[in-house]
Amino acid sequence: MIRISLATVILFLLVLPVHAGFDGGMAAYKARDFKTAYQEWFPLAHNGKAAAQNNIGLMYRRGQGVAVDQGEAEKWFRKAAVQGYASAQYNLGVLHQREGKNHAEAIIWLKKAAEADHAGAQNNLGVVYRRGLGTDVDYDEALKWFRKAAEQSHPRAEYNLARMYGEGMGTGRDYVKAFVWLEFAVRDLPVKGQKAARALREKVAKRLSRKDLERAKRMAREWNAKRAEWGETMTLIPWKDVYAVGNEELDDQHMRLFSLINMLYRAWVYGNEVTVLGEMFDDMLSYTVYHFRREEELLAASKFPQLKEHQLQHKRLQDQVLAFHGRNLSGSEANQLTTEVSEFLRSWMTVHVLDRDLRYKTIFR
Image (tube, rainbow, N blue to C red):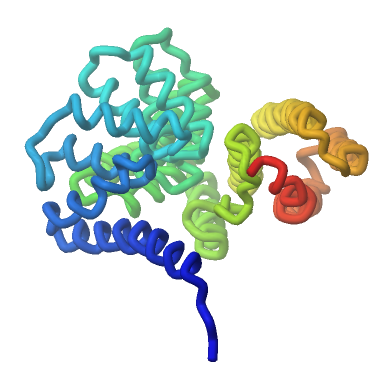
């Protein structure tokens, strides 16, 4: 006969409602039973679950199952945002952005979410820099963030990026790329937004020679095929909870590295300029060095017995990244280099984090 301890039963009963409550709330929300969704999520939010806090914030903002209350919405978004929950950071930024009461704080939260690879935040940050909302107009920054969001198939960002290329904002005028991104925007935007995208696409097409128009259409087909193969967001290595090592600072840094790697990979796939790729590689390299140094400091302070071995592994990984950095990012070897780098990055993040880093998980419990 199988014996189950009382402690096991109690643990099961404690854990089960957390998952059942959140999933039950989501099922109710999708069925538009907002009262039940709120009842399921509120206790979880009160106990600190970031996803539930974000959802409660959305319900207060939209008046779903509760009266509209922007103050309550902000309170719950902030609780989740300070835990590093990207969707809440985005929602908090949007709240400040739309009310226009604090553009500076809107930028802070939108940037945090954008750096965590949140496409909506990346698009909104592009709007901030293009229009100069609470900061100076900066077309270079606007172009950068629109591009990152568009490469994740964000419909509005696809349209915004096309405008940047078509009007030569932050870059030289490039009607071929403008047409390509408008092809995607027409497909991805909701019906209300498609009319403007179609009109702009027709306008751009008239400025292209027959040869360039065919080239633009071919590029769109090729990129679309890559999206179909890799998924709309073109994510090389998605973050999973199993990668968490139990230290909030290090987990945040690992998530940031995953984001940087995915953004760099998408930039390669979409054929961005060598200067853009170089800047992104520099960002990844400098953040990697910073992360390794900080991780080693925390492990040393915790007297991790395998610290020396871990430091040697970091040195080997850093040398490999530097070796890739020294090679040509364009030209005849570009495709081969892309394949090598993507495989290396996937292996590095999954094998190193899952194998090496999880060895020190117990010291942070």
